[in-house]
Length: 639
Image (tube, rainbow, N blue to C red):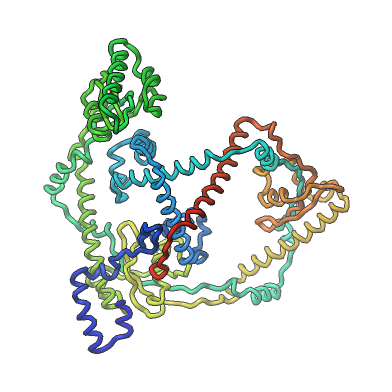
């Protein structure tokens, strides 16, 4: 909106509009006005709202996933932003439909299931064991509360239950198993010839005229893309923290304040339990009967001398821990509900508690090991505290100075010097950056590249808005120099042109020779007579399956698509390999997979694959039905 005002208004009209804007600026702050404080609803699914912020996060998750999957091959220009947003929205709608379905059908995840999942996750462990302190720290770093994270786990677990239930209902017949085994474990007998394009390239001569003609016909392949050099100013939390002095007294005060939560290793205890389950809504008689059972079990252990673990395996209603003799693992204060926690930390090693009541029932608890707590001394952690306090203060300064930077860069949009002067920063410059960015430096950030090539910055010559780089860094950029896309002269790219033409000619020669060899094979020539040991080599892997690792994938794919030989000794096919070589494939026999020859493990794996496919198909059908019956409203103008 501010951009439109600047472009379209002049004179007293502009001043009148600015006067009207003073109130919202005063109420909400300049920075919020630039960044936008609203979070509009982009879609509704049966009344449940999907917000713009959720969609933005989902798009970012998709981009990160694409980067991980494609690595160096990732090219942002291949993926339209509108396509990614539509796919991300579709996933959010699907998730909401599933969530509604799960809630409507009462699928639930118990507290104990959530606890076991949290304890099993490695990023909450220290030296291979769960740490409550580490758990709280990781969540705090990711701006999550335990309640929010555990709610996520419950949601994911409930959907997992749904998927497992659908998968468990899938029935795999012996006939299906036999058909799939015949294909999956099929083997094919093959020999093949490799025609080397690299060897053939040694005999290819290229004239200056060949190179010149190829260059003229393929100029676009030798075009330097449009590029910019950027001027920028950068605010950095790290740099701000360097100039912040924290008094020693403040550091000491922070230590005392956080000693228990940050610098104290909590006393921990290794715990076993036996649970006698009692429903939450049980009547008094049921509760009393369960307690009497727990007391009888305790008598067997304390007076009868029976082993706690052995008894737990026999009688405990907590089946997950009963298998391990009731072993829960290491517990720190506050991890369990209060009655359970109080009992754990009042027991001596080896002692068995009286029955303890929780929402799940009656528990008998035994402590099998005790690790005392430890407090780190001030001198050991004072530098760490000082750095953290400086970083926190720098965070506050970063927000304040970021607002100032946004204001000044907008008010003086034709130069970065006023912003640099106002904040004591230096105007820096990048090297040349194209639309695909660079491997390192500022050009490796896609948000910077997107801003640099936006109409506002590139065509109108204005400063960008704030671009956040992550790790407490933010920049404002402007174009210092621009050069349009240009076909590079032949003199500059001659070697590239020659290499490309030579590879093409060599690949063509390899295919030509390969096709001739295939014809000779079909006419009855012997394979070994066609190999010369140089440009043409013979490979005889014999019987191979689809997962063979001694044969190139293009050969395997082509081999398993070929018809079995009939009248001739070989079925023959040619295929181009990734490096330009050519393969001539001679298929001589096909042997179907035999279900009877498979091991029990292979059979189970095959059944699991079929069940998974069947479950995926069922879930797909279920989602289609849910979509058809759902009320879905998408606000296209808010995407």
